Image (cartoon, rainbow, N blue to C red; front, side, top):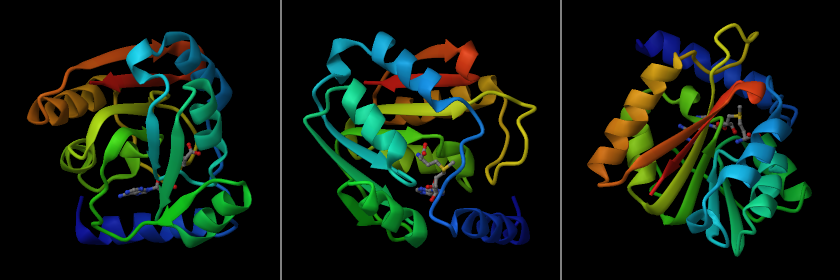
Length: 185
Ligand SMILES: C[S@@+](CC[C@H](N)C(=O)[O-])C[C@H]1O[C@@H](n2cnc3c(N)ncnc32)[C@H](O)[C@@H]1O
């Protein structure tokens, strides 16, 4: 992507999030149900860090189904971070390029917003012992500030990032939620 397109995307994102809400264009609850049913025991009871946690609503649901020991959100958008705080999440205002590390990292509907997804996923993943990524697969979804990737392409980028971290990826396609869940360990 060229610089102009990146800038336009960032402007659209900040407009979309200015009210403190990140509208979901997919059925989040169905993906979270699958997470609850399908996450293996290694992902249960961990110290969870949700990067790009938005308004924190999904973060709290994810933490609940994974019985997280602790939960922390990072968010770059000030309106979304403020809303997440109001929703009761412990949150850090994330700075551009900030290194984040921890136990179990989560990117829930965030990776398709990255400027350089493969590198950006790697930069986040390398700071964590384990990682979960959820990405939409609905090619025909209506406008959302992020970019569209075919499932095969996103899987390839996540696998390459995981290989650089000496980690393995398992994936679950959740058709009813038009999503893929990636478990990286
Ligand atoms: C569609 S929202 C998803 C929010 C939340 N994870 C959820 O599921 O409700 C996309 C989020 O990605 C965040 N984001 C975009 N680019 C990012 C980046 N480079 N690093 C971290 N977060 C980013 C945005 O600030 C926004 O919170």
